[in-house]
Length: 218
Image (spheres, rainbow, N blue to C red):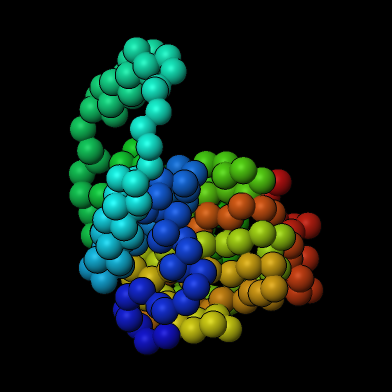
């Protein structure tokens, strides 16, 4: 994939965007896709078309009475009111607004933790059996080889990396699954900042990765 090419044409990403359009993604992954859409106009068009198609499909569904209507409306209005409390974090050049709102901070407010030399991380949230993590990786580093019990979604926010499926730059989403033995290599020209959401634990597969697991912070 060419740098900054936008939405790659593959079924996995199309399915992810369809999940966003239908409102079926959990919070951390929903925020990842929202960040991608803020950076990729072609994906925004794709999602708008999906949302329009979903709206047409809803028109053909027979309405049914809503149980506990007043309680549900009260909950909706309470959630909207809570969402309006406070202000958006000041903008920066790395985090798109949807991610800054989800993290409740801009990049200057991130409290990084060093995993090993050249790699820092900020755990955003748990995500089912997996997690949501923001990474800052120095140029030229190779991420330890790992496999996935589920799926891993990575949004590039700064810099880029190459793995077995292609080259990813700012705004691109890389998707790896249980069939992928993953070993991304960061571009040589600048640091890479990326936001990764997994739905199951990762398993380090190479000798260096296993050593880092035993020596790294617990």
